[in-house]
Length: 45
Image (cartoon, rainbow, N blue to C red):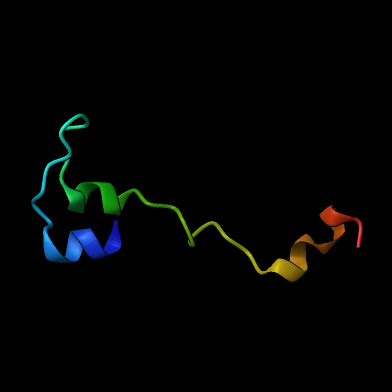
């Protein structure tokens, strides 16, 4: 959504009826991520 919101922020999603800018504002990818070494225990390593 980042690149789309930069080049066409007012583009409207045909089903959701929300702009690229609005959709990008709700993105949580990378904001809720954590380094891979913190997941080592989950993998049994």
